[in-house]
Image 1 (cartoon, helix red, strand yellow):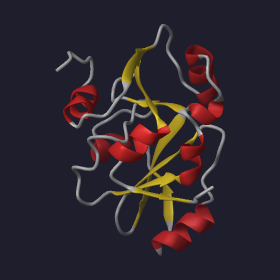
Image 2 (cartoon, helix red, strand yellow):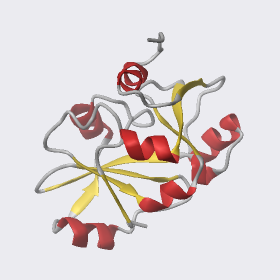
Image 3 (cartoon, rainbow, N blue to C red):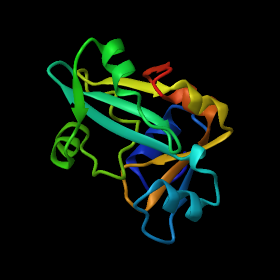
Image 4 (spheres, rainbow, N blue to C red):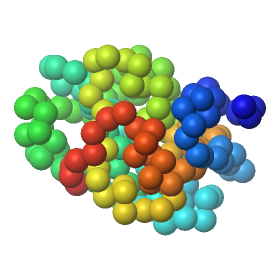
Amino acid sequence: MGNFITEVGNKLNLENINFEEFVLSNSVHTVEDVAKECKCQPSQVVKTMLFVGKKNPVLILLSGNNRVNKNLLESFLKQKIKMATPEQVRLITAFEVGAVSPFLISASPNIISLADESLLENDKLYMGSGQSMVLILMTSLELKKAFTGEFIGIT
């Protein structure tokens, strides 16, 4: 068992998921910042976004170069949704905006977790770890094993 910087890293290790913790040299705030820092394409950066509605909160994973098709998503969920505020993100996920990890959230029974199937077109993916200066790097195959939500077309 390795020593990992993040709680997410420890969880993934226990689940036998192959990944790396990628420590950032500089603070990042946009997909473009992450792509530059990681020397990758924006499509390899996973955005983890939280939406809220009258029913359950919805966690969405999509590649950095895509946008959520809100109408398609609302139709799939059968509820109107809006982007969560930073305070709602903190309360619901326990993570800060910009560091939200798609892992450890599945422990919350009320959250619906969805990932855009276009993520699986990438080999390597960089995503939040729960800490602002550390990313999780894994293959799309490992993401498919580790992510407990559903992969659908939402862009």
